[in-house]
Length: 88
Image (cartoon, rainbow, N blue to C red; front, side):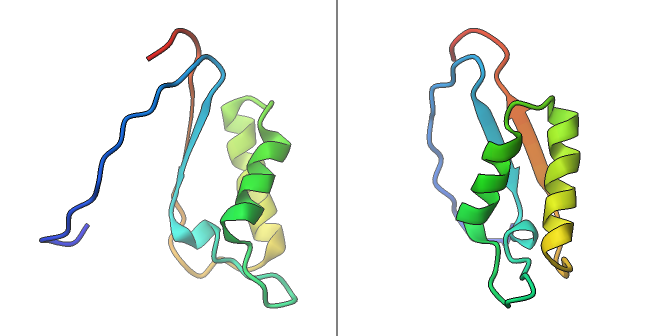
């Protein structure tokens, strides 16, 4: 985070089974052999493909899928959070 920057905050209601995915751009800026970047939509598709898996396995699959697309030259941060029960 850079000094003097401000970032908006928002509230969201979560229900059991909801999944929150936090990532850095290194995971979506990976380019395939055709030169096209994976992008947010492409990464979302990978998340949907593995959404039913336990989080640890989902994490590993996502990292493997991104690596299979192309070389990652930037930082990679991925945080997966699944709401287990209740509302909040």
